[in-house]
Amino acid sequence: MDELVATVTGFARTLRAAGVGADHERTQTMLRALDHLDVAEPREVYWAGRLTLCATPDDLPRYDRCFAAYFGGRKAALVRTGATSVTRHLAAGPEGDGGTDAAAAPATASPVEVLRHRDVARLTDAERAEVHRMLALLRARRALRRSRRFESARRGPLDQRRTIRDALRKGEIARLRHRRHTTRPRAVVLFVDVSGSMAPYAETLLRFAHALVRSEPRHTRVYSVGTRLTSITAELRHRDPGTALNEVSKAVPDWSGGTRLGEELREFLARYSARGAIVVIASDGWERGDPDLLRTQMARLARQAHRVIWVNPHKGYDDYQPLTGGMRAALPYLDDLVAGHSLAAFEQLSERLAHA
Image 1 (cartoon, rainbow, N blue to C red):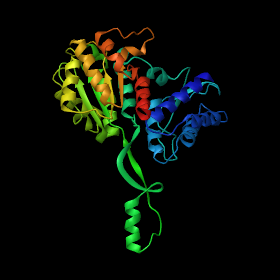
Image 2: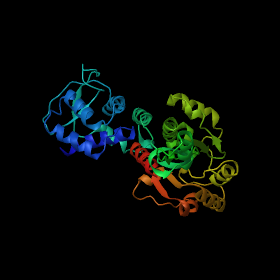
Image 3: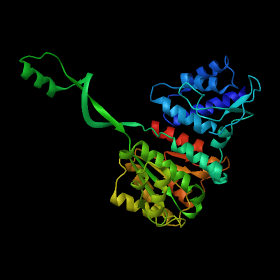
Image 4: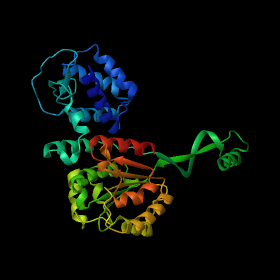
């Protein structure tokens, strides 16, 4: 039964990353439903999840895509192993009833759940392709910030201008008008290290960047950093991840070189601004430039940004220590130092951006 719980909760996390309202309460409801169903029957599990984990009609197509991605997409013979065994479902939905064909095979643990936590640098090509397919489903939500603009509201501060205008038009004050600030997604500025030491992680990081841009194209800026600062936001706006990465590969001139982040941040701050944005730096911190320069520019960046998050692939290991020159220089100015080595780490980063 523990394996079943792990499989369902892992699936719910994948759904939440894709924007489906599969919160803790809905996950528990699905588990309670499965107590009364045959978990070896794919049709029953599919509909149990669809009816309990989805919160709005918009969730339904996302649910189907995530079900297909999480549980495979291949067909296998249906094998019944008992109510407490874990069933690995291998398609998007049940045959008939508007879904696609489904089949299931028993498993002692969820292969996708294991894959979610594995270091992408140690995956086979097929496993990495599966992780990238899951990243393409990621719907990266953003924390909202209050804008300077106003909109009509039923309650709140008095909108004096509209109230007076109505009174002049009608000859009397018929009702008081109110207003409130509008909100908009908080901007994200992402720097992706494409130096040689980050080569095992660069493609996965760029696919995560693609998901960010696709989710909020007007409020996301992405730059590659290495020996040069290169804006790659326009290239990442392509709908297809493969096409986007091909365009990025043409635009970036300094693949697999060194890292001079201090110089590149100085250039960024001279040309652009990160005021009020969430800044995400994805790098292992192997700085080839002057650490003092990096320290100075990180201090400037931290004063501008709403929050500074450093994503280090090696942070996912228990024995990690931020000992490189770049990490030591940057550490005092970071709000968060997080892992960036696995699908689960990117899902957690997405959640962090939604609540920063």
